[in-house]
Length: 440
Ligand code: PLP
Image (cartoon, helix red, strand yellow):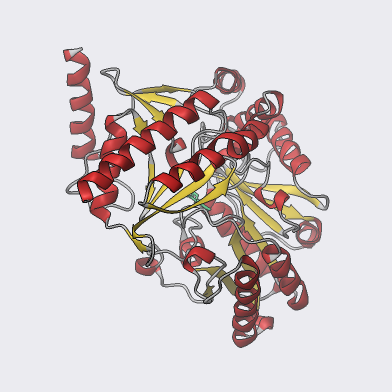
């Protein structure tokens, strides 16, 4: 036990000496050690275990170390570990076929990338090339990735220090609990958000807008499930002006909302879909763009000016094939829908009734947010220190939570069981009760 504890300390020392972390001031970091995992659990070298209700970065949809997925990667590694993108390869073709089979009719090609940011980067490039226009409209409450156009399309604070590119315009999307439109019903919020988007496009000059880029369900921004009719209204606006609709399914897709694609629950078909994360649960970095037939046909004669050394990497491709087969065979998407409907949805709603810190619960499937407030009347978000304390209380009780601003996102793997969900609900409850007492 002591030796294992020493190993955990060594891992942290090595990390602090040599690893430079994302989105952080480096000085005060104290990263948690993860040595292994299985299903919904992770542990350190000393054997301390946590229920992973973060799915890491909301990507491990199939759970940790699924044996069949690990075996598929091992088999592919024994066969062929790497091959350049211009070749044809069985795993790559099979992966693309699996994905387009889940996509709407009229979307038959896939461009593979290394992750979500470069998926958005390439979708934006395709829309610009196809339309001959340059502007991209996206929302303030969004995250689209860390690279050139993707980070500038992002709405949250991560855009601001990186904002050198032009031709990006932002709007507010619908979010009734913190409405920018003085709305009091979902219908009002939907109508006014659409009107706002239409006005911005008019003022920007519709003929200069290449794409509207939206997360189907904005994720890191707070799990903002759009009201009925919003995405259909955006589709109508895009059609009216010849604008491409790109739906970012990087976080919301592949089971997270209880559907294969989050837009399956809305009456909408995009021109381009971007995906990553849940497509293979991140076992090997992978992402991509699903392309509608007219855009794909445009590039039959015109050279597509984009590519990556690892586009369609065989290990990533084999992991996509296996992951999608496992999800279908084991009913994993259906499990996410059921847990959301029967366990997490009602359980979190009940928690919110008892816990004054919870201002709103929203979400579906295994994609939920608890919006924590200092005062339920004014809806003032709780202070960062309160979030830090909430996290510590949950970790002490064996639960790894996902925090974003003033929210706890309840985002376990799609394979989460009723028992695990019940345990997590009990930990949230105990932590909020203690926190409320401490704050009194
Ligand atoms: N799009 C969305 C909606 C995301 O949540 C993320 C990452 O969190 C990205 C894009 C970027 O993906 P990646 O980090 O794989 O580049």
